Structure formats: structure tokens, C-alpha cells
Image 1 (cartoon, rainbow, N blue to C red):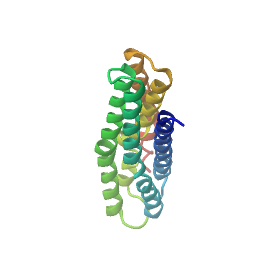
Image 2 (cartoon, helix red, strand yellow):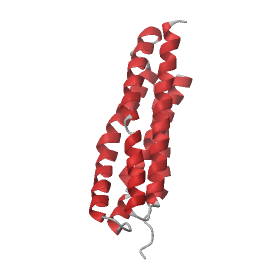
Image 3 (tube, helix red, strand yellow):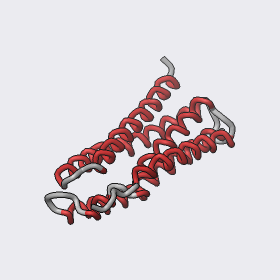
Image 4 (cartoon, one colour):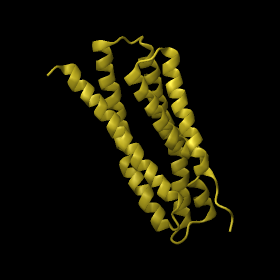
Length: 183
């Protein structure tokens, strides 16, 4: 068995690990939106936190195996590769810097909430627009990158795939950010 095929398998495994973690985190935050009490909310935030360790490992796996695959079969000036690297960089930065800050604010609100029903501030933060944009736009970027890996388009097509993936994810986030009626 040649090294290229083994590394390609590890590259795809890194993608699958990332998609799995994205799915778990997304489900946790969907459930968090409907949590009625602190006990319910903490269950879902804790599970999302436990899944979070997969992201840095899968990103390192993608970059390391992608570097090998590029050096072995492609060039560093291949447009779809450059665009995909930029997409991975955006996912890498956007997760901890944008979503991480919003999760920190949500955790602080949950800590201040105390036992019992969730207050208005905690409920509002479970529907934070920036948080939901990252939760759904990052998978859109990953799908755009996967398209690039499969189709290997030119620069314009590669950029379009990532931008369309991001835009669809961001648009899908909008309904999830609507605040419940006051009552």
C-alpha cells in the first residue's frame, strides 16, 4: 500500500472527525435553546465542551495530511488548495475567537443564573446571532472545502464554493437566533 493512499485516508478521517464534532456541538446547542432550567442547560454545554477537543486535533490532522498530499501530488499554488487552506484558517480562527467569546458569555450567564429556570439573559444568549452563525457557517465552509477537494475547481469556483457554504450556513442560523416572545 502506498503512502499517498494512507495519508489520503487519514485526511478523510480528519474531515469525518470534524464533521462528527460539528454535529455533536450543533445538536447540543439546539437542545440548549430549548433548555428550561440550569440543570438542562449545563448538561448540553458540558457535552459540547467535551466534544470540543476534536476540533484542534482534526484541524492539525487536515493541515498535516493536506500538506503531504499537496507536496506529493499537487503544488502549493493550486487555487483550490489555497482557497481551502484559507477556509480552514477561517474555521480555525472563527471557532475560538467568535464562538468561544459568545460561549464564555453564555457560561457566565448560566453561572449567574443559579439553580432553577433560566432567566431572560441566559435564554437570549442561547440564541446569540454570532454564536449561531459560527455553529452553522463553519460546517458550510467545511462543505465548500469538501467540494473543492472533490471537484478541484479553478480559483473562482473554489472561492464560490467556500463563500456559498458560509452564506448558506449563516442564512440557516438566522431563524435560530429569533428570541422567544416575552411572557
